[in-house]
Structures are given as structure tokens and as C-alpha cells.
Length: 168
Image (cartoon, rainbow, N blue to C red):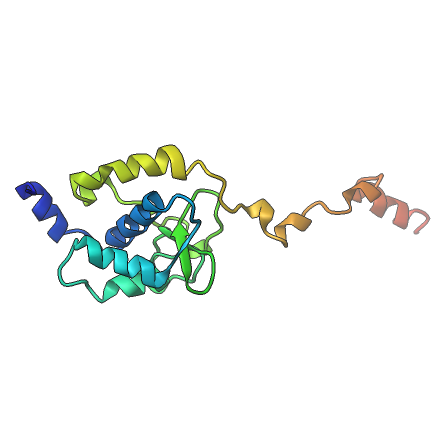
């Protein structure tokens, strides 16, 4: 039987936090999978029944509002990462994200979700967040930084001085 405090917390769980909980549960229940379809996340949220009936906003949060690497419109959360057109996983530090989401919430606070989900926050910080996610170094454009620097044996200032030598 659920405690009164948990029932109150469930009624006030934000849609974004509900999406995070559903996605975290899928990760914990399916450790061999890297990501999940948007449909699977919505179905898991519905199964969990944090809000009955399932709010229509859950789908929009899974598709757009919680997705770090999508343009914010208007939600600026960084709770999920789009690995494909219809696939998502939890966001990890090091994943790329839209610059307007820089300050976006990554995971719920303990007071934002019922107590029986607190173990998911511990799992996230001790196991999931420490796994290698994406990083800026893996970005093909950013990986070009410094490419070819070994062909220069002089500083840019020395190069300009050499070119201007003999000018009057």
C-alpha cells in the first residue's frame, strides 16, 4: 500500500520527471539496450501510472521538450538524448546538446518524484552517468580542431613577419 506522501507526490510529478522515470526504468530493466523508441517510453510511462490518465504532454516531452540535442520549443530540459529519429536514451554529461539548453534540468530532484523511485537517481549517478556518452571530441567538425598544426614550424606572427620582410 502506498503512503499518503507518495500519493501526493505522484499527483504532482511533472511531465518531464515522469518521462525521465519511465526512461530510467527501461534502462534498468533492459541493461543490454542502448536506447528505446519513443513509443516504448510513452508505453512505460503509461504502465507506471504516475498520472492517470496518461497526460498527452508525455509524448511531446519524449519527442521534443526533454531532448537535449533538439531545438528547445519551449522546454529546455536535457533529460533525454536523441540517438535516432524515433529513439531516445537518458542524457549523460558529455553528450552534445543545443546551446539554448545549457542550463536545462538533467534529472529530477529527490523531492520531485515518489520515494520508491529514488534508487533510480542513485543508479543514474553511480552507474549510468559514468558510462561514456557522446562528447564534443566525437563531433566530426570539432575533431578537425588543430588538424595540420604540425606543418607549421613558425608562429602566425613569425609567418606574417616573413611575408612582410622587405616591404617599405
